[in-house]
Length: 295
Ligand code: SF4
Image 1 (cartoon, protein in one colour):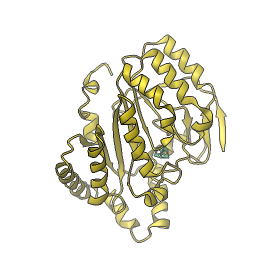
Image 2 (cartoon, helix red, strand yellow):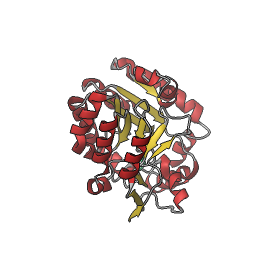
Image 3 (cartoon, helix red, strand yellow):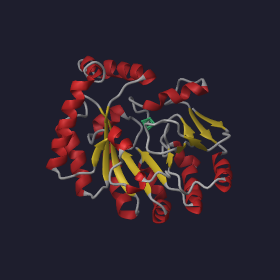
């Protein structure tokens, strides 16, 4: 169900140390993409609602509040991440059309942007993204856990097909000056961690001149841990216990094996701009922009 809310602030200061940006902007609360491993489930608790995938709140006054904030404060030296607890290009965006207006304001105020999506809908705004990318550095990642469309449909039922997401990244790379990457996250033991799957993602990035890949093994916490365990037991009953063990007690040994595998793949395809999320926060790849303290 779609629900309208008003917001007092559009740009939030980010207090987490596990991100490379200090500010975030979420036009929606909740996300229809329904990725079964979604880390943002906790964010609905503050609304007193436990239906993160089904109850989507849109911030009806987000544009006027954002405009007011950008007129009042100079954010042109700040990286703003759009969609940290939702996908800004989830299906409702086709109707609401918040993003073109947000991009117009970012263009007007020259705001550097970071955005990750699982939707090809972002191509609707490619001209505005191209414009913004000529003014300031912007970073757009498509999130791809697997290139197997069938498996992606089970894991991320309402997102664009994985193959379409890859094509979206390729198109964005051709038509904008943005840094375009792939978020290969999360890597799920026994389901998406094969050399074949990760290798295909890295090879595609290399062949299409994409700028970077960030990967992260599945890390289950809070509500997500319970939700994903239930999902595994109903969809993959034979694998469930082993997958949970590899993200829990057996995590250290599993990570070591996975990182070694990714090191081999990186060398095989001579694609150096790949790192795990923790390294990325410490020293983001290639992007001298991120090294600047002002952001
Ligand atoms: S696209 Fe992101 S926010 Fe949306 S359900 Fe998937 S993981 Fe969660």
